[in-house]
Image (cartoon, rainbow, N blue to C red; front, side, top):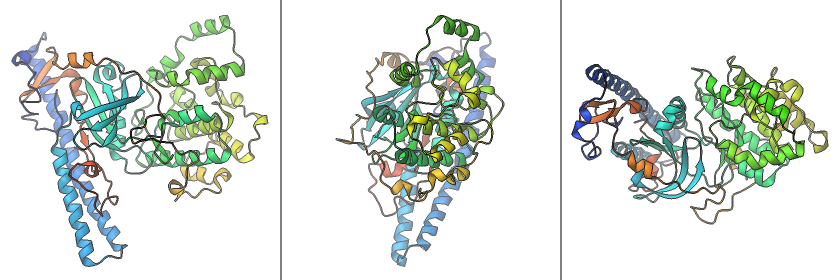
Length: 501
């Protein structure tokens, strides 16, 4: 495997690949020379391109951190000595950061505390860094599954968005790295669980409670849009809560910078064979609405972690493959608002296909109960977001809606959240579901590189599947504050720019 932060000519170190046997240089292929040459040149090309992109980004962001400091100093009443001390503190942080970027992280650097999430392609665990004792959420994704299910672009999109985000609305990424079998994202641990757990616990929110969380979710979505991305997977499961109960966006694997449309495979998996499903619908006894809601709540978490996922929050234009923009995220926001004040999503059905059909025919299928006592403002906002035409298309338009008339957008994160997580300790995971640890024998078995279809750059092996993940390694500037040698300094909090490695 190529380690994407080392030299092209001599990638990695002897100790990292001490399990690689000498005969891995023999390529088992019908045309070994051409395969070897092509793989080697492709890996080198990809690495060099990523290397120079990172260098340019690093210089740009370092300059921006200095500029940010000087701007801060202009607005602070400090003596010349105090200003110079802060400049020296920044210089020290930059030096610490350069040191951290040279460190090579591996899975064994982290102690597993508990698994807090599991999906179709991997799992999320609460871990402790052995050297610093800092807590993180570690997302581990299996490379072979990502390639098999064509999810490489998705995990790369998530890594890139998290790396470029520099705000309070997106979960913070500290590191990313890889080994022979897995990709790892090391992120901040948010102990409050997710919004779906909160909805399952309380069933229905008051309009004031919904207003707070929808306003924060709006700002979180806007922050992703400002980076040039659309999220495309806004749902309660992807809204995490910090220890104060405030919202942060996670799971940005479906984000896109408008370079390609939603994959057709996703739609095909959801819809399946229409004739077969229609026959099953005819043969089965339809559920009552009450039974349907109870069934949905019971199966909701399992569906969220399946490979297909839930289409309940997906805009119709995504299914139609007609091209779309940021407004698909505002549709999802409206669906979540409906669920908060009604108790279930608006297009709830017995199966995903029927849900998709209802979404595509939303003009006729969107019904807001009359017996819920909902205000005109909340009903109007839902209808302005969950619609095909005349949908509110920008964050600024939505902020001006009467439903948000008492919201202070500049200070909302400083306000008290409606629900504050009850935490007994820093490692309290009570707000997450329980998961059994899986046998990791397969991971150990796969430590020895496959001898088929490999190429060499310098000393090390580059396997075919690893070509897709060149450039994945990342260390953020915020990791400086997590460094065991770094004590909190006066300059902390002023600079949060990230930097690729």
